[in-house]
Amino acid sequence: MRLLIVDRDGVINEDSPDFIKSPDEWHAIPGSIEALAAASQMGFTIYVVSNQSGLARGIVDIEQLHRIHALMLSEVKRCGGRVDAILYCPHGPDEGCRCRKPRPGLLESIAERTGAVLRDAIFVGDRLSDLEAARAVGARAVLVETGHGRSTLAKLPAHERLAVYPNLAAVVNRLRSPGP
Image (tube, rainbow, N blue to C red):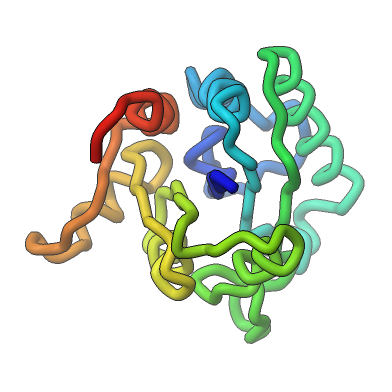
């Protein structure tokens, strides 16, 4: 199985310090929807994983979150692709749950559901918590410069080896190409 795991806010859609609370506030980053569709057409199993502490904080309700995800899924489908599942952590940052990135619970759940070997997976994110979650399960971490990606990159040690791309579309274009 070719597994592509993608963070949501800042990678697929524009992020907001005020949280994405409704479908009206959800705006895809240019090229990201087409990239997800292309990756699924290339045979990747695609999982979106996201920390959604707005639920625990009472900023976002579950119905709105489902509407946001339905919009995203319909946009990918409109482009001829699919997302296999969306997993999210509904907990706040101080709740100590296992599913909130950088902890690996969401990724381990993917392995349990699919039988996938996570060290063969590619995880695309824009935050240090995404990179740390990927590393915790041995997945290949890829950083995009959208969302918080540039500020994350600035915080990393200069000697750190990491694949960095401008956006999700560039990542998928690279996956189309042969070679390392």
